[in-house]
Image (tube, rainbow, N blue to C red; front, side, top):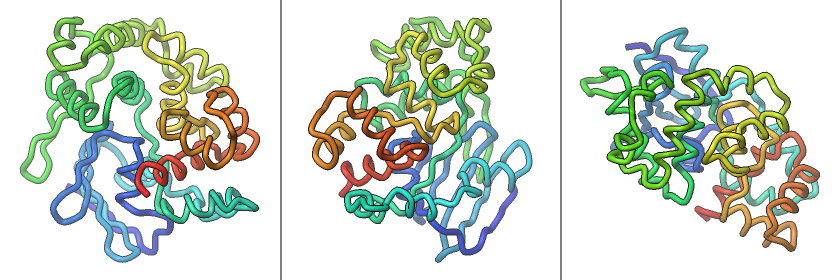
Length: 279
């Protein structure tokens, strides 16, 4: 078990980060900390004042993994200042979710997770992902408990559509099965998508069955560091039509967001999403 304490960390609140819809495998503990399963292992995070304490079992450089996963080298205060220029709505939303940070999650896991998210709710998404991990992932022991890493494409390729259906995927079973086949076979290469410009990467992701515009934008934002990606779901339609643009048309909302928020549109989206859903 390894641990790390970082002092005077700004723009970092556990509830804001883990309850803003970007992740599905973090659980709040009785002491207010959160424990999550990430690609490299199991991690517990807690705050004491302005200090953030990390503890866990990770495969790799512990400090580097924590800094990268939580995007700790990005200046969110400067981003908020930029986004809030002449924008009272963003001032309100970013003040409410001031501690949000975009997590740098595993692209393969996010690809499957957001296919599962279609027409679904967060508790059920989390349960389904956990079912997949228990059935096909590798065990990791941490703090006396057993956790399961998300399976690789090769590990998950052992599952038939019927196997996936038994894990409560519903109509998404065929999409997860086909996405797994495409990635495991090399027909889709995530490492190649990571090298593409954002528009090309979005188009490539949308060639995979079960991935539409919103799911592609979520994958891009939450695992491929494309901070300009602006996922539009029901909540964002509502808040954008109420505060910014007199339309619920996804194309018009995306165009407005790109012009209004620029390269930080995805961070703006998270402030608006969290504010609308939680405030």
